[in-house]
Length: 157
Image (tube, helix red, strand yellow):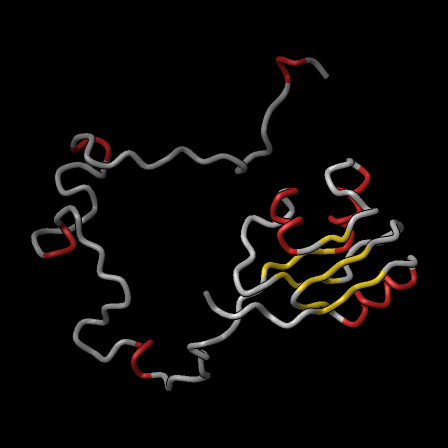
């Protein structure tokens, strides 16, 4: 096999359709848009419009409920904290709070608090204080010899 013998599989590539390029192309004049009407003009997008019939998204019943005052937590995995400790961006000897995590760059912002999840493994002995944590995360930190304290969420400022 030589470089000049390389070919794509037959049918793998297809020439794109060039519309509006004269009568010989078979897609000239109206460029496959038909004659007149809203869809023949530019700048028209009629998504979900069904010609006056009630659109599907309106025919189906509404389901579920979105809690207006729900809490949104910044999520951090244990593996990521371990990575930052290894890279000396976090000091494992000091207490690690939510503000420390923001300063280190693990979390961009605290939102309604920081929640620790157990993905990844932790080997450093850490003293963490956060708003939330999964049971498995608490177990993993304690197994490594550290403590994970779940403090009450700070009052809305």
